[in-house]
Length: 333
Image (cartoon, rainbow, N blue to C red; front, side, top):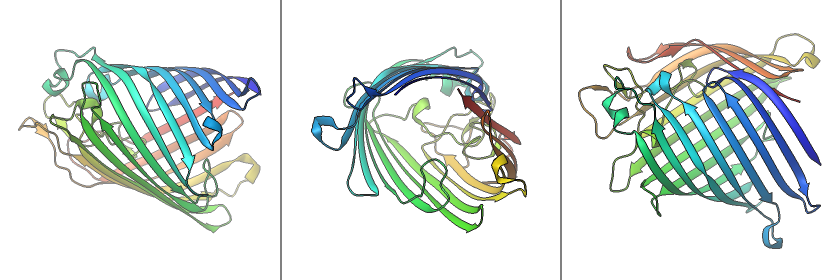
């Protein structure tokens, strides 16, 4: 039941990447799950150690822990890099056949570094170390026919995160996600997905890394963090305290043999993010609606899934950052 995986890939968000992992799905014959993995990418690298006990205290509770270290390069979007080191304690259980609840407590040290003197003052103010203690509650109602490639059904999910039981950060973040899938005809799938989120500082302002960023994978046609509050002079993305996004997508066959695994798609994405506190006249922050339209191709290839999206903004602000082509590709052996 143990396995070794080696993978490589490329994504517009993280650049070229390589990962290796060791997984044991029946540790010591007790059904426990353990894994060690490392991913090295041009703009984000991560090391993980995870352990899960599927029947904690002889109950139907999946409990476990994670230890991790992540390094991220955000120079292009916001002129800073980050290092995050910490761990999670987590537990999840089913309330009913389709309703599942989870809890997680995270402890991690966060460092914002490599901030140039030419960066936005809002980014320079975020430089340094913080310690996060965060309790997250999640609940999801899942009626999809598949969690990996859904073609029918829907999912509703809510997450609430409270930081401030220890640590240096204090905030309450709430997010709601939803998705609906309709099979129209053989291999023709219509889907609607959306998210809303809000974060409020508790007795203090919301930090740069805790804000919402929109653009890229979650708003195609725009660059990573390409939408929302932005420094007028340095062009650094600063994030916002609320966000919403939605997508309508039609997936359809291309008239080729099904075993080739090729499919086309048409989509329109909407979204926005706003509110920066404190703010000033040196910041673009309109909170206005953005809309993009596009098409794409997905290929379940022998080398792993490949997705290419071509998006064009049709409603945008002059200070937004565009990106018309987005690629995601990855494989494991």
